[in-house]
Image (tube, one colour):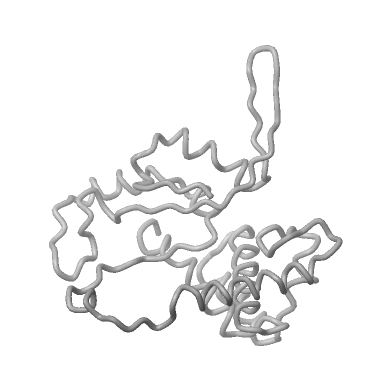
Amino acid sequence: MLFLDELPEYRRDVLEALRQPMEDGFVTITRVNAQSTYPSRFILVCSMNPCPCGNLGSRTRQCRCTPAEIRRYLNRISGPLLDRIDMHIEVESIPAEKLSETTLSEDSAHIRARVEEAREVQRARYEGTGIHCNAELNARTLAKACKMASGAQSLLLASTERLKLSNRAYTRILKVARTIADLDGFEDIEEAQIAEAVQYRTLDRKYWG
């Protein structure tokens, strides 16, 4: 796992260098007299503020940034890099009164058990194919592994058209929906799983659109 905190603070050329290994699972290093390729498959997790001061969209604090400053800050992250990130999730600040609550909706042990069960489903589905999980699906294997109910397929096509999603975003939504269906215990992907997966691809439209 590769975790990049404060994503826009990294040099743009460093971030752009992630695009090939994110897409292909390997990295190529070229020097004057040689070129070498190494395996580089990883889970990328990033975090960032919505603006330089961090208060854009806050319900309790006022943003101090100008529109130009916000645009320069966000433009450090390119569209092609965003397109390769499967899920974009906005996390709001937690009110102080909720920090003292002792009840949880679901504890970590239960979540881990559900994830392990979904992983086992994927291992069984892809046994003998060289694929280990949904994230590794390619164009050749996607249709067979990600069977959709008719309503789910219609919703995905309509969302792709309405949000002007790329072909890459379409396939990533489908793989995320496949994972959600595995967690829910569904053999085929239903409308609810497509709707949830699409929801994770709309944040770039809000800030970069």
